[in-house]
Amino acid sequence: MHVIICSSPEEAADLVAREILDALSRKPDLVLGLATGSTPIRVYDRLLHAHQEDGADFSGVRTFNLDEYIGLPPAHPHGYRTFMHDHLFGGSNFTRENIHFPPTEGPDLVEKCTAFEAKIRDAGGIDIQILGIGSNGHIGFNEPTSSLASRTRITSLTEKTLRDNAPFFDAGEPQPSMAVTMGIGTILDARRILVQAFGLKKAEAVRQSVEGPVSSFFPGSALQLHANVTFHVDAEASSRLTMQAFYRRSQENVKELEAKNVL
Ligand code: GLP
Image (cartoon, rainbow, N blue to C red; front, side, top):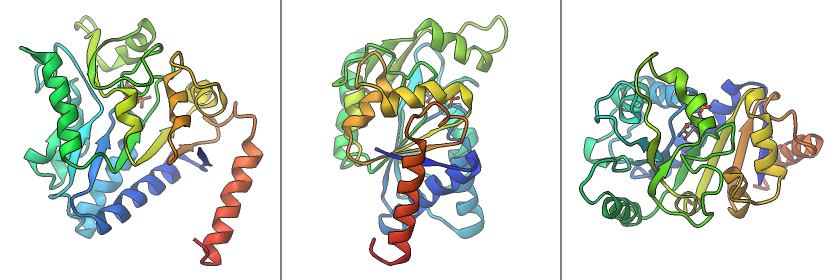
């Protein structure tokens, strides 16, 4: 597990966006796993900028979103399709047919979830998965007690998640309590995972994910089972990590090797 303690969320977003754009330059039909929430917005800003100012071409990129609420019509202002349109797809040249969201409507929703997994496999698997983390440790909408082997499926949201996400809904507006999410097993199949977490609100989630025991009771900890994960955190989100000095020194060591052209 790599932990990069960044000077700011901006620096984290620079690093994550740079890695995605580098991968895109090597593989124009890159397969990206995308997240919603406030955390990845700065990365999407940078990808938009790269398209609008520097000509980055996303037309061949295949995308798979992590999760979506059940019960919201596709164009609902608080649905994740709208979020992705507003923050990334609308201002860039992703191709409509290459954009995939977990299914949320019947009939045969369970079979559709299996078909979503098959689409990921048919695309050759996810090259880079972008992730945020819920304050209760959820990744995607894999809530505590989600099986570490889980696949794309229908899930219920915890009270904590409903409270955390309530501000995104208007007062009095019904808030969905179910969703379809990629499973933890689906996420762990990605070849590279880039996690970001910012602010004190995420400090405990980061501590448990990075330094806690692997447990389905804290889904972020499942990332310890993946060989190529990097956590990009700011000082506040890293504040409960016990090995901060080690992570900082490891960062310096890597920079030194890079400078010497060893890497
Ligand atoms: C939501 C999403 C997650 C996201 C999490 C954190 O519940 N389903 O994929 O990582 O919230 O959100 P935020 O980035 O706003 O803190």
